[in-house]
Length: 517
Image (cartoon, rainbow, N blue to C red):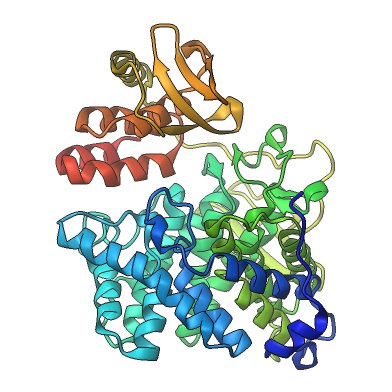
């Protein structure tokens, strides 16, 4: 465990403008003082990382460090944090403008609009507005492109969330964004793919949480928008807690394959990402008054504050990007109209669902086409081993055969020989990034310290091979093969990233890849 730095309470009180006396909710926020102390300590540590550049994506600009520092400036009233915000801006804004000037695309996961928006609103810097408009109109995810502002794939929920946030900020500057409403409808469908339709094959909780952030931004910006998204967010938040919370670690898992299957229940939590998820629960507590959302949000917030590793700039930004909203919404407590319970999302065709909400949960009576009724508590803790009976699935399309794409990638990797110095790839069996050394007939070799260790091809999953291809190649054929193999392996987010890269090399191939199922 990294030693924790503790700023005396008097030091904190002398610079922070948000003392506990302002709290409207009677229950105090756990670990708030530690959150404030870490904010000051690690904010100073990462105040200037301009010399580190854009890649790898491990530095404070990532997850919108500019916005983080603006929020710290507002929270503390200390203008020095604005200088630190502009340090991030120099790295990120320059990257955005220069990338598009070269005719290239900023990838969807690197779309960070809030800092640019705040800089323009505060200082009327036209370059910040220019960069923001470029993000809204020129990325692969932008309205008018072949993705057109959103993708139905739940694996792309992070990128869709970022695009929705960007469009909403541009709208605030007075530019109409007609694709906002379709993007909101798409975001709801993506969340329901996890918790209602249960068709998503994998979940990384922080990614749909970023989609939730975009939907909440929509609700805060559009009067009545909460009525559109609230039922789905309630359903998703309850489902996420049941499926992805790891109690022993006080954290959500990093990744879970085949959610809704009891045999895949996560065993380890990733506290570094808690604060990208916790604000969802604070907002739901504010909107519904349901105590379970406050309790769950507080657990996630406290677990993240106590256990997140903040020595890396990226980790610092991801922990403070949205957690100021958590503190704000938790302090505010439930709205006066919070007693009105949202209706659950409508059932699929062929079923009729009625729901009544109570203080501890909601009970749904579901009738299928034959008239049989089933009753289930939406928020009750399932008994060990219990699982809802699956609905009869519709005829599924034939699964994509991974064999030819795997064989093609293996042949290319074996010909490659030595890996480029510094190349890494995520290896599932190692549960982490591995430094790649070389490739041979029997398998790749990775660096462990100064030594090489063999990983046999036969022991690598299709996902592993796809990630090796993604790490080592830039040509259209290899990127397509890696994307097709990722598709067959159910790794939709990886497929989307490869499609973004492929677009710059061979747009026709990129479109072909995205048609694969």
